[in-house]
Length: 135
Length: 242
Image (cartoon, rainbow over all chains, first blue to last red; front, side):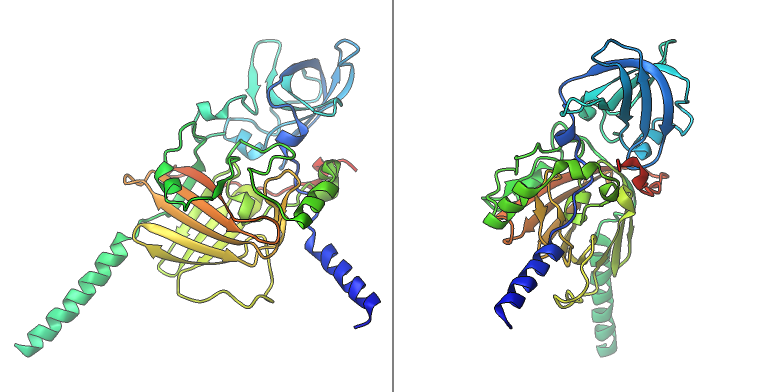
């Protein structure tokens, strides 16, 4: 085999061997030991794996104002706790407490969604080992 | 008398076989992960040989970027980690990029197990992965056979412990932090059930000299929940950003 072809073959092998980026990690993208709260109005809610997504327009101070993308942990896990596709609806006014994105963007993972009447939907708990087997 | 003696031998043999079969525990059913503060299956970990690095990211736990559980990565793996772009994980095209059995089993999702004398099947909820373990004594296929996220698994019983050997895995994430295992990783699993049949423990060990030195391991545990089933995962890539 000519040297150039050897190089091409090695390059091809490298390209084949390297997998694409993985499904994103919570630990890499979010701050696990910090919780923040954002208050606002829901504009969209989807409830499909790998993550439910809540789009929220914040009415908070300047630091938190604007549109937020807020992901839940897997809907499969949340279904077992009673969440459904209609647990959250566009127009709902809620406070979301969760784990902020490491890059400082308006992106977070839900710990809990709190309604004005005190009802809560619990997502990713700060210490899931407290309850064996259902997180 | 001679006939009776031969029949006795046959009967003893059959009884021995039945006893052996009965000694194998019944793993069949629905199992949900145990998120333990104290490892209820520590005894299985204690059976590991010295020098094995235990990866502590089971269940809800995850390793941060740059934390590789103390493993010494090969230069090629170090370079691949250096080039890894975490922002790519949030793209639509990578949203449903499922891990292989070398990382998927530890995720905090339940599974169903189906068991016969010749097969054990793991129906995993996470990314809908199905693993088939052959117990009929067949070898692994040639190295050139297709690789997959489930790989090719062969197993046998050592008393009450199911021992599974898996090869033919595609390369995939190993710790979900930019470090990938290669497509030549070999994985050995030891499954064991508690005496009351309500807890299942697993220790996976991995050898992959293409990307790290020595042997690594993970511990997992599940609780039996009769009457429940896994849900379809049906990963939807629309979660990701353009």
